[in-house]
Image (cartoon, rainbow, N blue to C red; front, top):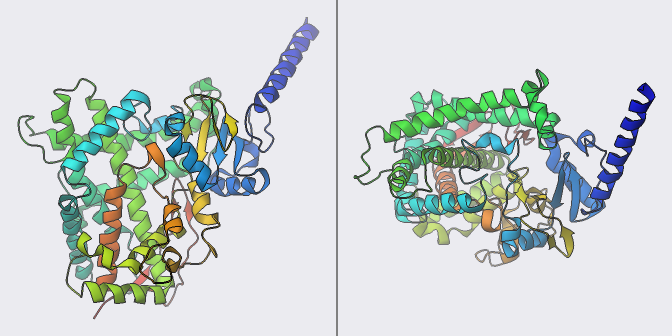
Amino acid sequence: MFLIVISFLLSALSIYIWLFYENVKRYPKGPIPIPFLGNLLSVEFRKLHENLSEYSKVYGNVFTVWLPLPYVVITDYDLIKEAFAKKGDDFAGRTNAFPDTLFQNVENGGVIFSQGDNWKEQRRTSIQILRDFGMGKNLMEEQVLLSAQDFLAHMNSIKNKEAMDLRHPIQVFIANVINKTLYGFSYDYDKSDRLMAVADQFNAIFEAGRENKLIMLPQMFPFVHKLPVIGYAIKGRIEDMMSKVKEIIKEDVQRSLRDYNPDDEPECLAQAYYKKMQTNKNLNYENLLNVCMDFFLAGMETTTTTLRWGSLYMATNQSVQDKVREEIMSVLGPDRKPTADFRNRMPYTIATIYEIQRCANIVSLNVFHRTTKDTSVGSIPIPANTFVIGHINHVMAHSPVYKDAEQFLPERFLMDDGTTFNKEATEQLCPFSIGKRQCAGEALAMVELFVGFVTLLQHFKIEPTKERPVDLEPIYVGILLPKPQPLRITPVQ
C-alpha cells in the first residue's frame, strides 16, 4: 500500500512538472523557473528592479520572470508605449492578488489597484472633482503656493541650519497640499507627529514586503496565509500594519464629513465625493476611503521623496545649483512667487527637475498590469490574464537616449540653444508611467515639484555638511528613498 501511495505521488508530481514546463512555453523566454517557486530563489526582492535589468541583458526587452506566477517584463520604452498606450485596453487590468489587495478597503476598490468598470467610475469621478477644485488651473496652484509660504516660514524659523535633514519640512509641505485637497485641513509644522507616523508606517509596510519573498506565495497557493504562524509571517503581519494606516485615513475622512451637509458646496474631495454618492449608486463610502488612501499615500510619499533627492543632488552638484538659482533670480528675483506664468521662462530649472526625476528614479517597479485578453507586444504573444511589469525604472536608467546616464546632466533635456526641450529625452522621462493607467495626480505633482524646488533654491543654498559627505545610495523599500542625512542650509543673501 505504501509503495502504491509513493508511486501515485511520484506520478502526480511528474505530471505536474511536465505540465508546468509546457505552460512555461506559452510565455516569452526568461530565466528558467522551478516548479512551485518559479524564480523566487534567484531574485533579490530588495533590488528586484536591478535583477530585472540584468535579466534584460540576457533575454532581451520582453521576457518572463516567475514570482512564482509568470510576470512578463517589458524594458524598452517604445514597447512599453505600445503595450500601455497603443494597446491600453489589452493591458489595463490589475493583479487583484496579494500583496496589491493590501491597499484596498473593499474588493476592487479605489483608483490605483482597481480595474474594469469600477476603476473607470472611480477614476472619472476623482479626476472630475480634482478639476473642479482646480487641478491644472490657478486654484490648485494657489493652494500649493500657500503651503510653500508656510514651508518657507517654518524654514526661516529654524535658527540653526548647519546640519539639517529636510525630510520633515518637505513632508509637511507636500502633505498639507494633499490633506487640504482631500480633507479640507492641514497640519502645523510643530504638530505633525500623526502625519509622520503615517509616512513611517507606510514605509515600514513596503520594507516588510521587500524583505520577504514568501509574500508572493499566496498568489499561487491561496491557502498559505491561513496556516498558523507561517500565514501570519507571510500575510497577517503586514495586514495588521496596513490596518493602522487605513484607520487613520478613515478618521480623516470622518473628520471632513462630520459637519458637512450634502446640500452645501463641498470644500474638499471627500465632501465632493460624498455629495456625488447621494445621486450615483456606483459610488459608496468604502470606495471613498479607498480613493482618499490612494491619493494620499501615492501623492505624498513620491513627491516628498523626489524633492528630498533634489536637495541631495543640488548639494553634490553646486554648479548646477548655482545655474538654477541664477535663472530663478533673473526671472523671479528674490521675492516673487514661482507661478506657472514664469515656468516657460525657466527652461534650465525645468530641465533640472526632470533630471532629478530621472536620476532619483524613485519607483523601482510600477504597479503591475494584467492582460485582459490574448495580446502581443513587439509581435511577441502574451496570454490573457498575464501579469505585466512595464519597467519604467530601467528606461530612465538605461535608455540609449540618456548618454552617460550615471551622471547628473540637466542639459540632456535641452537642445543646443539652451531653451528648446529635447523631445526624445522628455518623452522617455515617464516617472508617472504611460497610457490609460498613468498617474491621475501627475499635474498636481508637477506643480508641487516646481513650486517646492524653486522656493527652496530661491531662498536657500544647499551644501554638504563639513563632517559628512552626501550619500546617494538609496534605501530600497517600495520606492527608492534617500538615506536620512544632514545638509548645510544657508539663507541666500
